[in-house]
Image (cartoon, rainbow, N blue to C red; front, side, top):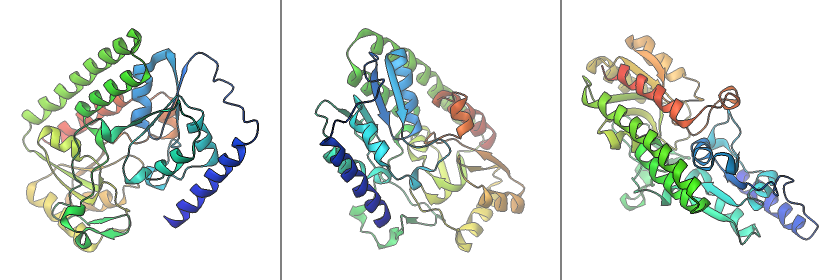
Amino acid sequence: MRKILCVLLSAVLAVSALSGCAVQKNPDADDGKLHVVTTIFAPYDFARQVGGDDVSVTMLLRPGCEVHAYEPTPKDIIAIRNADVFIYVGGESDAWVQTVLEGVDNPDLRVVTLMDCVELLHEETVEGMQAERHGHDHDDEDEGDEELDEHVWTSPRNAACICQKLADTFSHASQYAQRCGDYVEQLDRLDAEFQDVVENAARKTMVFADRFPLQYFADAYGLDYYAAYPGCADAAEPSAATVAFLIDKVRADGIPVVFTIELSNGKLADTICEATGAKKLEFATCHNVTAQAFANGATYLQLMERNVQALREALN
């Protein structure tokens, strides 16, 4: 964290120094489009769906990179400064944002915080989970200091709320409202698909040999879960107790699928699957995608439709 702060302060100073000179805005700034900057993939895609051809959207997190390793660069801060709308999560993984916004001289910048769009849940530490988050053991924290779970976009219902907020923020023009309404209908159909899978499933338990940034998803559909780490954990080598617990749980409950999340090395899942005969599958959290998927135009709906199929296999 100290390294991140040093980089951040250097970046802010660089932008401040530039502000005294003739800083030119993005050459595309006069293209008639609304310029939107987002930190991660999910709101990047939401902005594209709601904004259509009327917006130009930039994602700061590089495709293929893990969000918890992200550090803002001076170029990123200048992109925020030149934006019309900036969208970020609001949780621990982008705590740097407030410092940046304080140093950005753009009184017209509209800011959307995803965690302000929905009802929030506290991050949970379930049985067997290696309860470390950013170097701190949850057992050392007071009950009242529970961290709010920041992964709000993983529930399609929350995604609909976020999109409505984006449409209102972009403009009250009819084209934004129409595109938002059309997209929310697609999110509603996705929600119905997940509900149907869960209602007709043989079991209601998921196992993740990985972080679990899907608490909003699990809560929306009444699912139980076991996982190696909380959603914002520093995923180092798992403890022997965590590995043993997950292996025993998969064996005892006859769990057919062990999940990993995107951009994970999958080694823990391989170990558990080898010991139990379970199948390893990926469950997309939509915080980022590979460079190839990004270049191919991957969308939140595409990723979540794959999750529908993966969940059906895991629960039956």
